Image (cartoon, rainbow, N blue to C red; front, side, top):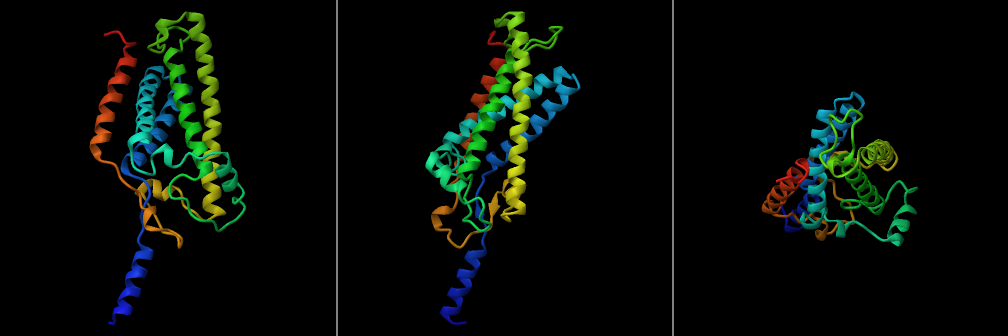
Length: 237
């Protein structure tokens, strides 16, 4: 085999090597949030309020960890690397009708809006739930002791209202995933499971995800766990 043939084989092998796009913390937090929201929905409609409260604590932990990881995590997890301004969003939106477009390594400009909005809505719904007062007062949020019964009932209605808004936003997110899969032939679910995607012709070495050390995640998990515990006992130490 000549050196030229070996070079061609090496190039071909490099072109078919999948690129890392999502680290384990991002993928784990994503699917844990899916499970948590599903449990919250089921326990809410079936009036299993004790379990609804515990699933709310779990979601609070997940969202706070995702926000933390969005500051100190891997390159594709950090908000600073995927949240874009209006021009970038409009430029990307103008290409949606094209079937063949460059693959965004991580969240694209429109997907970033979806992620930020969903995280914001989930956090808002959970915070409202912490202050919400149940009709019989048996399973009220841990922070409801800081407000009146009337205020707590009003917040409970807001908690329900904004959860319904969240469901519509999630439905829109799922519709976008289906659109990318059917029309643009891009599988967005697979990379969120195994963490990799096939390379594009225009990909460069800098496209590869830069990971973050595990100790950062561990430190964040300890701090966030302490915060959620303090909230669960209404800061009564």
